[in-house]
Amino acid sequence: MFIGQIGSNNYFNKMEQMHQKNNLTQIAQCMQTQAIQRKTDTVMIHSVFMPNKDESGFYKSNGNQMRVFDSIKYIQLAPDERLKAEILPASEQTSYTECDALLNQYLKQFHIDGHIEGDQFVRYSDEPVKLILADQVSDTDLENFRQQLNENGLGEDIDWCGVKEDLWNISVGFDNAERLEIKANYLASRYAVLKDLIQNQYISDKQTAEMDKLEHLYTEAKEEMANTYANSIGGFYEGLGQTDVASDMKASVLAMVDEKAAFYEKHLAQTGDYAKLSASENPWLKQDDAYLAARLRESVAVSLSGTETRTMDTLVKYNANDLTFAGVYAKSLSSKLERPDIVWDTTQDDSDLGEFLAKQNIAAQAGANNSGVNKEMVKLISNVFESFMNQFMDALDRTLDKNQEMVNKNPWMQGTVRTKYIDRNSVYLAFQNTLTNM
Image 1 (cartoon, rainbow, N blue to C red):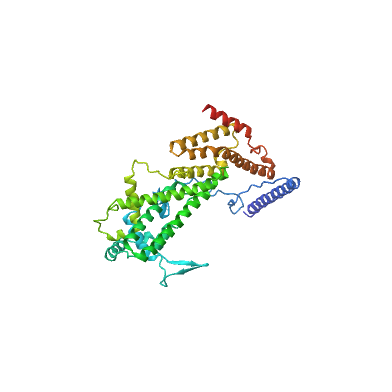
Image 2 (image 1 turned 120 degrees about the vertical axis):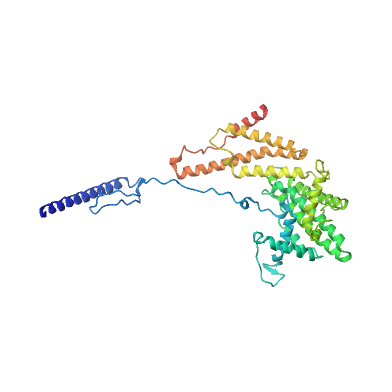
Protein backbone atom coordinates (compact mmCIF):
# COMPACT_ATOMS: atom_id res chain seq x y z
CA MET A 1 0.00 0.00 0.00
CA PHE A 2 2.89 2.35 0.81
CA ILE A 3 4.51 1.66 -2.59
CA GLY A 4 1.14 2.17 -4.36
CA GLN A 5 0.68 5.49 -2.65
CA ILE A 6 4.10 6.64 -3.87
CA GLY A 7 3.23 5.54 -7.35
CA SER A 8 -0.01 7.47 -7.22
CA ASN A 9 1.76 10.62 -6.05
CA ASN A 10 4.33 10.29 -8.80
CA TYR A 11 1.56 10.01 -11.38
CA PHE A 12 -0.12 13.20 -10.29
CA ASN A 13 3.20 15.01 -9.98
CA LYS A 14 3.99 14.13 -13.59
CA MET A 15 0.57 15.30 -14.67
CA GLU A 16 1.05 18.62 -12.88
CA GLN A 17 4.48 19.06 -14.49
CA MET A 18 3.02 18.37 -17.93
CA HIS A 19 0.23 20.85 -17.24
CA GLN A 20 2.72 23.56 -16.26
CA LYS A 21 4.90 22.78 -19.29
CA ASN A 22 1.93 23.16 -21.60
CA ASN A 23 1.04 26.48 -19.99
CA LEU A 24 4.60 27.77 -20.44
CA THR A 25 4.57 26.67 -24.09
CA GLN A 26 1.26 28.47 -24.71
CA ILE A 27 2.55 31.63 -23.03
CA ALA A 28 5.71 31.59 -25.16
CA GLN A 29 3.69 31.10 -28.34
CA CYS A 30 1.34 33.91 -27.35
CA MET A 31 4.26 36.29 -26.66
CA GLN A 32 5.85 35.38 -29.99
CA THR A 33 2.57 35.99 -31.85
CA GLN A 34 2.05 39.34 -30.14
CA ALA A 35 5.60 40.39 -31.00
CA ILE A 36 4.92 39.66 -34.67
CA GLN A 37 1.44 41.23 -34.75
CA ARG A 38 1.90 44.11 -32.31
CA LYS A 39 1.30 46.64 -35.11
CA THR A 40 -2.00 45.06 -36.15
CA ASP A 41 -5.43 44.86 -34.53
CA THR A 42 -5.71 42.15 -31.89
CA VAL A 43 -8.96 40.40 -31.04
CA MET A 44 -9.04 38.47 -27.78
CA ILE A 45 -11.93 36.11 -27.13
CA HIS A 46 -12.38 34.79 -23.65
CA SER A 47 -15.11 33.69 -21.33
CA VAL A 48 -15.86 34.87 -17.83
CA PHE A 49 -16.85 31.31 -17.01
CA MET A 50 -14.44 29.62 -14.64
CA PRO A 51 -14.59 25.84 -15.04
CA ASN A 52 -15.00 23.78 -11.91
CA LYS A 53 -12.23 21.36 -10.97
CA ASP A 54 -12.16 18.50 -8.56
CA GLU A 55 -9.49 18.09 -5.90
CA SER A 56 -7.09 16.57 -8.42
CA GLY A 57 -7.31 19.60 -10.73
CA PHE A 58 -9.31 17.78 -13.42
CA TYR A 59 -12.32 19.52 -15.05
CA LYS A 60 -15.71 18.35 -13.94
CA SER A 61 -19.10 19.33 -15.35
CA ASN A 62 -21.34 21.91 -13.71
CA GLY A 63 -25.12 21.64 -13.61
CA ASN A 64 -25.48 25.27 -14.70
CA GLN A 65 -23.74 24.67 -18.03
CA MET A 66 -25.80 24.00 -21.17
CA ARG A 67 -28.90 23.86 -19.02
CA VAL A 68 -32.23 23.97 -20.84
CA PHE A 69 -34.35 26.84 -19.56
CA ASP A 70 -37.77 26.09 -18.24
CA SER A 71 -40.68 27.46 -20.28
CA ILE A 72 -41.02 31.22 -19.70
CA LYS A 73 -44.28 32.28 -18.10
CA TYR A 74 -45.76 35.74 -18.54
CA ILE A 75 -48.97 37.64 -17.93
CA GLN A 76 -50.31 39.99 -20.59
CA LEU A 77 -51.70 43.16 -19.03
CA ALA A 78 -54.22 45.45 -20.63
CA PRO A 79 -52.74 48.89 -21.42
CA ASP A 80 -53.58 51.69 -19.03
CA GLU A 81 -56.03 53.97 -20.81
CA ARG A 82 -54.59 56.97 -18.96
CA LEU A 83 -51.31 56.51 -20.82
CA LYS A 84 -53.13 56.94 -24.13
CA ALA A 85 -54.63 60.28 -23.15
CA GLU A 86 -53.14 63.31 -24.87
CA ILE A 87 -52.57 66.26 -22.59
CA LEU A 88 -53.96 69.28 -24.42
CA PRO A 89 -54.42 72.91 -23.38
CA ALA A 90 -57.98 74.13 -22.86
CA SER A 91 -58.01 75.79 -26.28
CA GLU A 92 -57.44 72.47 -28.08
CA GLN A 93 -59.89 70.27 -26.19
CA THR A 94 -62.94 69.30 -28.23
CA SER A 95 -65.14 68.48 -25.25
CA TYR A 96 -65.97 70.30 -22.02
CA THR A 97 -68.76 68.68 -20.02
CA GLU A 98 -70.57 69.58 -16.82
CA CYS A 99 -68.32 67.13 -14.95
CA ASP A 100 -65.26 68.85 -16.40
CA ALA A 101 -66.58 72.22 -15.28
CA LEU A 102 -67.26 70.97 -11.74
CA LEU A 103 -63.80 69.43 -11.41
CA ASN A 104 -62.18 72.58 -12.80
CA GLN A 105 -64.01 74.79 -10.28
CA TYR A 106 -63.00 72.40 -7.48
CA LEU A 107 -59.32 72.50 -8.44
CA LYS A 108 -59.36 76.30 -8.57
CA GLN A 109 -59.42 76.25 -4.77
CA PHE A 110 -55.83 75.06 -4.86
CA HIS A 111 -54.51 77.37 -7.57
CA ILE A 112 -51.54 79.54 -6.68
CA ASP A 113 -52.54 83.06 -7.68
CA GLY A 114 -49.99 85.81 -8.10
CA HIS A 115 -47.91 87.76 -10.60
CA ILE A 116 -44.32 88.14 -11.75
CA GLU A 117 -42.26 91.06 -10.49
CA GLY A 118 -38.84 91.09 -12.06
CA ASP A 119 -37.51 87.59 -11.55
CA GLN A 120 -39.75 86.75 -8.58
CA PHE A 121 -43.29 85.37 -8.27
CA VAL A 122 -45.45 87.31 -5.82
CA ARG A 123 -48.39 85.40 -4.35
CA TYR A 124 -51.71 87.01 -3.53
CA SER A 125 -52.22 84.84 -0.44
CA ASP A 126 -50.15 83.84 2.59
CA GLU A 127 -52.03 80.60 3.18
CA PRO A 128 -50.04 77.36 2.90
CA VAL A 129 -49.91 75.88 -0.59
CA LYS A 130 -51.83 72.64 -1.06
CA LEU A 131 -51.18 70.56 -4.15
CA ILE A 132 -53.83 68.17 -5.47
CA LEU A 133 -54.28 66.16 -8.65
CA ALA A 134 -57.54 65.48 -10.45
CA ASP A 135 -57.23 61.74 -9.74
CA GLN A 136 -57.12 62.47 -6.01
CA VAL A 137 -60.57 64.07 -5.92
CA SER A 138 -63.27 61.65 -4.75
CA ASP A 139 -66.84 61.54 -6.02
CA THR A 140 -68.03 62.44 -2.52
CA ASP A 141 -65.85 65.57 -2.44
CA LEU A 142 -67.17 66.64 -5.83
CA GLU A 143 -70.79 66.11 -4.85
CA ASN A 144 -70.36 68.11 -1.65
CA PHE A 145 -68.68 70.87 -3.64
CA ARG A 146 -71.51 70.86 -6.18
CA GLN A 147 -74.01 71.49 -3.38
CA GLN A 148 -71.91 74.39 -2.13
CA LEU A 149 -71.85 75.93 -5.61
CA ASN A 150 -75.61 75.60 -5.96
CA GLU A 151 -76.10 77.34 -2.60
CA ASN A 152 -73.49 80.08 -2.99
CA GLY A 153 -72.88 80.36 -6.74
CA LEU A 154 -69.58 81.42 -8.27
CA GLY A 155 -69.87 85.04 -7.23
CA GLU A 156 -70.43 88.11 -9.37
CA ASP A 157 -66.79 88.72 -10.28
CA ILE A 158 -65.36 87.18 -13.42
CA ASP A 159 -62.47 84.81 -12.76
CA TRP A 160 -59.93 86.66 -14.87
CA CYS A 161 -57.07 84.52 -13.53
CA GLY A 162 -58.91 81.46 -14.79
CA VAL A 163 -59.44 83.07 -18.19
CA LYS A 164 -55.75 83.92 -18.47
CA GLU A 165 -54.83 80.38 -17.49
CA ASP A 166 -57.09 78.93 -20.19
CA LEU A 167 -55.58 81.21 -22.84
CA TRP A 168 -51.93 80.91 -21.85
CA ASN A 169 -51.11 78.32 -24.56
CA ILE A 170 -52.97 79.75 -27.53
CA SER A 171 -49.98 79.70 -29.91
CA VAL A 172 -50.01 77.71 -33.17
CA GLY A 173 -47.00 76.06 -34.81
CA PHE A 174 -45.86 72.86 -36.47
CA ASP A 175 -46.85 70.72 -33.49
CA ASN A 176 -50.53 71.75 -33.54
CA ALA A 177 -51.15 73.37 -36.94
CA GLU A 178 -54.06 71.02 -37.60
CA ARG A 179 -55.87 72.46 -34.55
CA LEU A 180 -55.77 76.09 -35.70
CA GLU A 181 -59.52 76.40 -36.23
CA ILE A 182 -60.29 74.61 -32.96
CA LYS A 183 -58.20 77.17 -31.10
CA ALA A 184 -59.77 80.06 -33.05
CA ASN A 185 -63.27 78.83 -32.19
CA TYR A 186 -62.31 78.51 -28.55
CA LEU A 187 -60.96 82.05 -28.31
CA ALA A 188 -63.87 83.57 -30.25
CA SER A 189 -66.54 81.77 -28.22
CA ARG A 190 -64.94 82.69 -24.87
CA TYR A 191 -64.85 86.30 -26.01
CA ALA A 192 -68.52 86.28 -27.08
CA VAL A 193 -69.71 84.72 -23.82
CA LEU A 194 -67.62 86.99 -21.58
CA LYS A 195 -68.79 90.06 -23.49
CA ASP A 196 -72.40 88.99 -22.98
CA LEU A 197 -71.85 88.38 -19.25
CA ILE A 198 -70.21 91.78 -18.79
CA GLN A 199 -73.01 93.61 -20.61
CA ASN A 200 -75.66 91.86 -18.55
CA GLN A 201 -73.94 91.87 -15.13
CA TYR A 202 -72.33 95.29 -14.93
CA ILE A 203 -73.22 98.89 -15.66
CA SER A 204 -71.45 102.21 -15.98
CA ASP A 205 -67.74 102.37 -15.06
CA LYS A 206 -67.61 98.77 -13.86
CA GLN A 207 -68.84 97.56 -17.25
CA THR A 208 -66.26 99.69 -19.05
CA ALA A 209 -63.43 98.46 -16.82
CA GLU A 210 -64.40 94.81 -17.31
CA MET A 211 -64.72 95.25 -21.08
CA ASP A 212 -61.25 96.79 -21.16
CA LYS A 213 -59.88 93.71 -19.43
CA LEU A 214 -61.66 91.45 -21.91
CA GLU A 215 -60.50 93.38 -24.96
CA HIS A 216 -56.92 93.37 -23.69
CA LEU A 217 -56.89 89.59 -23.12
CA TYR A 218 -58.68 88.89 -26.40
CA THR A 219 -56.33 91.08 -28.45
CA GLU A 220 -53.26 89.68 -26.73
CA ALA A 221 -54.33 86.06 -27.33
CA LYS A 222 -55.37 86.77 -30.93
CA GLU A 223 -52.02 88.45 -31.67
CA GLU A 224 -50.13 85.52 -30.15
CA MET A 225 -52.05 83.04 -32.26
CA ALA A 226 -51.49 85.05 -35.45
CA ASN A 227 -47.82 85.80 -34.80
CA THR A 228 -46.83 82.25 -33.89
CA TYR A 229 -48.64 80.84 -36.93
CA ALA A 230 -47.15 83.44 -39.27
CA ASN A 231 -43.61 83.00 -37.89
CA SER A 232 -43.64 79.21 -38.04
CA ILE A 233 -45.87 78.26 -40.97
CA GLY A 234 -45.53 81.49 -42.95
CA GLY A 235 -41.81 81.63 -42.24
CA PHE A 236 -41.42 78.09 -43.57
CA TYR A 237 -43.02 79.00 -46.90
CA GLU A 238 -40.89 82.11 -47.15
CA GLY A 239 -37.87 79.89 -46.58
CA LEU A 240 -39.01 78.05 -49.73
CA GLY A 241 -38.82 81.27 -51.73
CA GLN A 242 -42.34 82.72 -51.34
CA THR A 243 -42.49 86.41 -50.42
CA ASP A 244 -44.98 88.18 -48.13
CA VAL A 245 -46.56 84.88 -47.07
CA ALA A 246 -46.02 85.45 -43.34
CA SER A 247 -47.71 88.87 -43.34
CA ASP A 248 -50.61 87.59 -45.45
CA MET A 249 -51.11 84.65 -43.10
CA LYS A 250 -50.98 86.83 -40.00
CA ALA A 251 -53.65 89.15 -41.42
CA SER A 252 -55.76 86.13 -42.36
CA VAL A 253 -55.57 84.60 -38.87
CA LEU A 254 -56.56 87.89 -37.23
CA ALA A 255 -59.50 88.33 -39.61
CA MET A 256 -60.60 84.72 -39.13
CA VAL A 257 -60.77 85.04 -35.33
CA ASP A 258 -62.65 88.34 -35.51
CA GLU A 259 -65.13 86.89 -37.98
CA LYS A 260 -65.77 83.93 -35.73
CA ALA A 261 -66.20 86.15 -32.68
CA ALA A 262 -68.78 88.28 -34.51
CA PHE A 263 -70.61 85.16 -35.65
CA TYR A 264 -70.72 83.75 -32.11
CA GLU A 265 -72.01 87.07 -30.77
CA LYS A 266 -74.78 87.11 -33.38
CA HIS A 267 -75.76 83.49 -32.68
CA LEU A 268 -75.77 84.10 -28.92
CA ALA A 269 -78.06 87.12 -29.32
CA GLN A 270 -80.47 85.30 -31.62
CA THR A 271 -80.60 82.02 -29.69
CA GLY A 272 -82.36 81.95 -26.36
CA ASP A 273 -81.28 79.12 -24.08
CA TYR A 274 -78.40 77.87 -26.23
CA ALA A 275 -76.82 76.20 -23.18
CA LYS A 276 -80.13 74.56 -22.15
CA LEU A 277 -79.80 75.70 -18.54
CA SER A 278 -83.26 77.16 -17.94
CA ALA A 279 -84.36 74.03 -16.07
CA SER A 280 -80.92 73.00 -14.82
CA GLU A 281 -80.47 71.82 -11.25
CA ASN A 282 -77.06 73.49 -11.24
CA PRO A 283 -77.63 77.25 -11.55
CA TRP A 284 -73.92 77.96 -10.97
CA LEU A 285 -73.26 76.79 -14.54
CA LYS A 286 -74.91 80.00 -15.79
CA GLN A 287 -71.91 81.85 -14.32
CA ASP A 288 -69.24 79.49 -15.69
CA ASP A 289 -68.08 81.22 -18.88
CA ALA A 290 -65.90 78.28 -19.97
CA TYR A 291 -68.89 75.93 -19.78
CA LEU A 292 -71.16 78.43 -21.54
CA ALA A 293 -68.61 78.90 -24.33
CA ALA A 294 -68.44 75.13 -24.86
CA ARG A 295 -72.24 74.97 -25.17
CA LEU A 296 -72.18 77.95 -27.53
CA ARG A 297 -69.69 76.19 -29.82
CA GLU A 298 -71.91 73.12 -29.86
CA SER A 299 -75.00 75.18 -30.65
CA VAL A 300 -73.26 76.96 -33.54
CA ALA A 301 -71.90 73.68 -34.92
CA VAL A 302 -75.40 72.19 -34.98
CA SER A 303 -76.91 75.26 -36.65
CA LEU A 304 -74.19 75.31 -39.32
CA SER A 305 -74.28 71.61 -40.09
CA GLY A 306 -74.08 71.19 -43.86
CA THR A 307 -73.85 74.92 -44.60
CA GLU A 308 -71.00 77.09 -45.86
CA THR A 309 -69.89 79.83 -43.44
CA ARG A 310 -66.62 81.02 -44.96
CA THR A 311 -67.54 84.61 -45.82
CA MET A 312 -64.29 86.34 -44.97
CA ASP A 313 -63.31 89.70 -46.41
CA THR A 314 -62.06 89.31 -49.98
CA LEU A 315 -59.08 91.48 -49.08
CA VAL A 316 -57.81 88.64 -46.89
CA LYS A 317 -55.99 85.94 -48.85
CA TYR A 318 -56.72 82.84 -46.82
CA ASN A 319 -59.70 81.50 -44.87
CA ALA A 320 -59.66 79.00 -42.01
CA ASN A 321 -59.63 75.99 -44.35
CA ASP A 322 -56.72 77.41 -46.35
CA LEU A 323 -54.70 78.16 -43.22
CA THR A 324 -55.27 74.71 -41.76
CA PHE A 325 -54.23 73.01 -45.00
CA ALA A 326 -51.16 75.22 -45.29
CA GLY A 327 -50.13 74.35 -41.73
CA VAL A 328 -50.53 70.59 -42.18
CA TYR A 329 -48.68 70.65 -45.52
CA ALA A 330 -45.84 72.72 -44.11
CA LYS A 331 -45.58 70.28 -41.20
CA SER A 332 -45.28 67.38 -43.65
CA LEU A 333 -42.58 69.03 -45.76
CA SER A 334 -40.65 70.20 -42.71
CA SER A 335 -40.50 66.69 -41.25
CA LYS A 336 -39.12 65.39 -44.56
CA LEU A 337 -36.36 68.00 -44.55
CA GLU A 338 -35.46 67.25 -40.93
CA ARG A 339 -35.09 63.48 -41.47
CA PRO A 340 -34.49 62.84 -45.18
CA ASP A 341 -32.79 59.53 -44.39
CA ILE A 342 -36.11 58.16 -43.12
CA VAL A 343 -37.98 59.37 -46.22
CA TRP A 344 -35.53 58.16 -48.86
CA ASP A 345 -32.88 55.45 -49.01
CA THR A 346 -29.91 56.89 -50.92
CA THR A 347 -28.81 53.42 -52.03
CA GLN A 348 -31.67 53.51 -54.54
CA ASP A 349 -31.25 54.89 -58.04
CA ASP A 350 -31.47 58.67 -58.30
CA SER A 351 -34.01 58.42 -61.13
CA ASP A 352 -36.29 56.60 -58.67
CA LEU A 353 -35.99 59.63 -56.39
CA GLY A 354 -37.23 61.86 -59.21
CA GLU A 355 -40.24 59.62 -59.76
CA PHE A 356 -40.93 59.55 -56.01
CA LEU A 357 -40.86 63.34 -55.75
CA ALA A 358 -43.12 63.73 -58.78
CA LYS A 359 -45.72 61.49 -57.16
CA GLN A 360 -45.43 63.52 -53.95
CA ASN A 361 -46.09 66.69 -55.91
CA ILE A 362 -49.12 65.20 -57.67
CA ALA A 363 -50.53 63.98 -54.35
CA ALA A 364 -50.14 67.45 -52.80
CA GLN A 365 -51.97 69.10 -55.71
CA ALA A 366 -54.77 66.55 -55.50
CA GLY A 367 -55.03 67.04 -51.74
CA ALA A 368 -55.30 70.81 -52.14
CA ASN A 369 -58.01 70.50 -54.78
CA ASN A 370 -60.00 67.93 -52.81
CA SER A 371 -59.87 69.94 -49.58
CA GLY A 372 -61.56 72.93 -51.20
CA VAL A 373 -58.82 75.52 -50.62
CA ASN A 374 -58.92 78.67 -52.71
CA LYS A 375 -56.85 79.43 -55.80
CA GLU A 376 -54.28 81.43 -53.85
CA MET A 377 -53.50 78.43 -51.64
CA VAL A 378 -53.35 76.04 -54.61
CA LYS A 379 -50.90 78.41 -56.25
CA LEU A 380 -48.76 78.57 -53.10
CA ILE A 381 -48.64 74.78 -52.80
CA SER A 382 -47.61 74.50 -56.44
CA ASN A 383 -44.93 77.18 -56.26
CA VAL A 384 -43.05 75.80 -53.25
CA PHE A 385 -42.41 72.27 -54.49
CA GLU A 386 -39.44 72.93 -56.74
CA SER A 387 -37.65 74.75 -53.94
CA PHE A 388 -38.57 71.92 -51.57
CA MET A 389 -37.06 69.41 -54.02
CA ASN A 390 -33.75 71.26 -54.03
CA GLN A 391 -33.66 71.57 -50.24
CA PHE A 392 -34.58 67.90 -49.87
CA MET A 393 -31.68 66.84 -52.11
CA ASP A 394 -29.40 69.20 -50.19
CA ALA A 395 -30.48 67.44 -47.00
CA LEU A 396 -29.76 64.05 -48.57
CA ASP A 397 -26.31 65.27 -49.60
CA ARG A 398 -25.64 66.24 -45.99
CA THR A 399 -26.37 62.67 -44.95
CA LEU A 400 -23.90 61.53 -47.60
CA ASP A 401 -21.34 63.92 -46.12
CA LYS A 402 -21.73 62.04 -42.85
CA ASN A 403 -21.09 58.79 -44.73
CA GLN A 404 -17.87 60.29 -46.12
CA GLU A 405 -16.79 61.28 -42.61
CA MET A 406 -17.31 57.68 -41.48
CA VAL A 407 -15.24 56.40 -44.39
CA ASN A 408 -12.46 58.87 -43.59
CA LYS A 409 -12.32 57.54 -40.03
CA ASN A 410 -12.80 53.90 -41.05
CA PRO A 411 -11.20 53.24 -44.47
CA TRP A 412 -12.45 49.67 -44.45
CA MET A 413 -15.99 51.08 -44.96
CA GLN A 414 -15.05 52.36 -48.43
CA GLY A 415 -17.55 50.91 -50.89
CA THR A 416 -19.98 49.75 -48.19
CA VAL A 417 -21.82 53.08 -47.92
CA ARG A 418 -22.70 55.71 -50.51
CA THR A 419 -20.62 58.89 -50.50
CA LYS A 420 -21.40 60.23 -53.98
CA TYR A 421 -23.81 63.19 -54.08
CA ILE A 422 -27.30 62.96 -55.60
CA ASP A 423 -27.27 63.26 -59.38
CA ARG A 424 -29.61 66.24 -59.83
CA ASN A 425 -29.92 65.81 -63.60
CA SER A 426 -31.20 62.26 -63.22
CA VAL A 427 -33.69 63.40 -60.58
CA TYR A 428 -35.01 66.32 -62.64
CA LEU A 429 -35.32 64.21 -65.80
CA ALA A 430 -37.25 61.45 -64.02
CA PHE A 431 -39.39 64.06 -62.25
CA GLN A 432 -40.47 65.70 -65.51
CA ASN A 433 -41.03 62.37 -67.28
CA THR A 434 -43.26 61.18 -64.45
CA LEU A 435 -45.32 64.37 -64.44
CA THR A 436 -45.74 64.10 -68.21
CA ASN A 437 -46.84 60.47 -68.16
CA MET A 438 -49.13 60.58 -65.13
